[in-house]
Amino acid sequence: MVKDSDLWVAALTRGHNGGVCLLKNGEIVFAIEEERLSRHKYDGGPLASLVKILDYTDRLDYLVIAHTHSLYSPDTPKVDFTGDDIYTGLARKLGLISRDNSLLPNHPQVLDSSQYHHNLHAACAFYRSGFNDAVALIVDGAGTISHFQADGVEYGGWETESMFCCEYPNTIKCIYKHIGSRGPHRADCILDESDKNNKYPVYVTDRGGIVKVYEAVTQYCGFDAIEAGKTMGLFPYGKKNPNIPPLFDDSLDIPLSNRNIIIPTYPNGADINDKLNSELSFSTDKELSKLNNRRDLAYHCQIETQEQVLKLIKKAVKMSGNKNVVLSGGYGLNCVANYYYLNEIKDLDINLYVEPISSDAGTAIGAALWANNIMSNNPSRYKKQTNLYLGLDHFYTNEKITNIVEKLEVDVTEISKKQVIDIILDKNIVAIFQGKSENGPRALGNRSLLFDPRHKDGKDFVNRVKHREYFRPFAGTILQEDVHDWFDLRGMADSPSMMYAVNCKPGVAEKIPSIIHVDGTCRIQTVTKEQNLHFYELIELFKEKTGTPILFNTSFNLGGQPLVETLEDAIWTLKQSELEYLYMPEFNYLITCPNT
Image 1 (cartoon, rainbow, N blue to C red):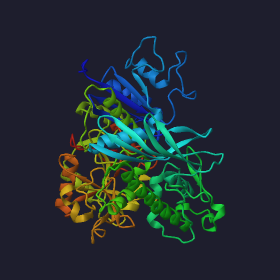
Image 2 (spheres, helix red, strand yellow; image 1 turned 60 degrees about the horizontal axis):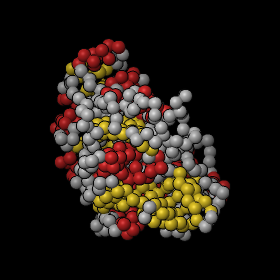
Image 3 (tube, rainbow, N blue to C red; image 1 turned 60 degrees about the vertical axis):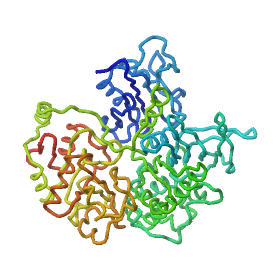
Image 4 (cartoon, rainbow, N blue to C red; image 1 turned 45 degrees about the vertical axis):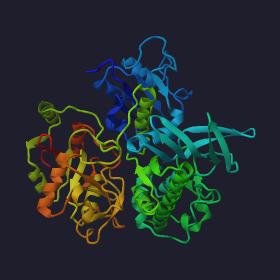
């Protein structure tokens, strides 16, 4: 029941990770990306997600709208005749905000937070870190468009790296910013920007930041700039190559790409200038990821970018005087780098939290939490996040499931967990579908594909079934109590969000070859009964039968598609692939396609 005293805050982000986060009295009700509903990868314009708010409330106290350019800019789509933006217009038409005729751009129910893109990344990470105060480091591709003036000259560009001092209830104060400018070429410069009484250094350059380097190499390897995770998977196939020049120029105390190699194309993507270096110009009709120069450049990219982020972590601590560091922005999803930092800061007394939803989807969460603590008479104080199962409630019942399977012409039978393990032991992939979907890019046992990690050819087999590249590694989920016998967590107690590619202990790679990458690492999720009971019990049964407390775990989707959200999505994925088994542990159901 919706009470008049309840405070409902929704925030949406409009870009390539478009989505919505809904809060009730400061607590997350749901957070979802538009692609999960539209089934279009990297879908923007979260209109379907906005409609889902009606499943929980028929009104909003505040609607916060985020992106990297203003909601009220001339190129923002408008509703015919009324002229309001499409998001405010849809919320009004749904009755979520005022239906009166006085709706203006600055209507008090609608907040445009687009000019605070990096602030919203910082808010998401800070409020979910469990710290009472922290310094936030944001490492991103191209955030909000910013304009500055100095000595009569106007400088402008996109945020690449930023730092913020964060304190409860709602302080997110900038102390450092790097702006990437799109020509004409200007000399690198340092400005003092004034934000009320807050002065901080702003570096404006026409060169790329850290993520632009990664985007350039990603495109050079034959992928889309946004598919940086593929470059991360390719990097250990390469090696240090003395013929590849440095990707960064250390002439200033900030990350600056080598102008002779990296050509940023703000706001999106970047290119490699292969004409100035014979090592980088070699190409054939062969698949690019199999060329040594691509592999070697991917190696250099990973090593050099993570070193640059480490420098910024140390710089953030020095500038702020705070040793609680939260990391977000797109580069925060680099699980190889995240593990590297742990080794490098172990003697520095730095407390590091890496936000699991570091992509732009996290800005919807950050906008909602920040707005809640600004607007509420009783601001919330949050504990460290332990739950990424933040998707929608689909309210499945036996009757609803029966109707779906009959409509989609698949079979459903009852099954026990032990029987599911027997299917997995027979070298089959089993999809698991339960509860609310995971927010962020990691599958954590509610929308996962499970397999026996002991099979030597398991990686090649599952990559083929999922239509993924040969070099892509897979993750594993392990019982919390067993993780330290199998993996080196570098001082961490657990890894519940699958944010670190960790080293395996001696002798482990031979036991679970399907999920150990070529560099001896595995992206690990630890799980307890409290976090995910059904998933935990499956792995526990697998351990009883095999002595191995870990299951191969990858996202329930096919290559290039979003993770499945609904049961209909899950069944469609089965019918369009070689996948045969779909397990619903809450109902003890096994769904299969006839004649598979």
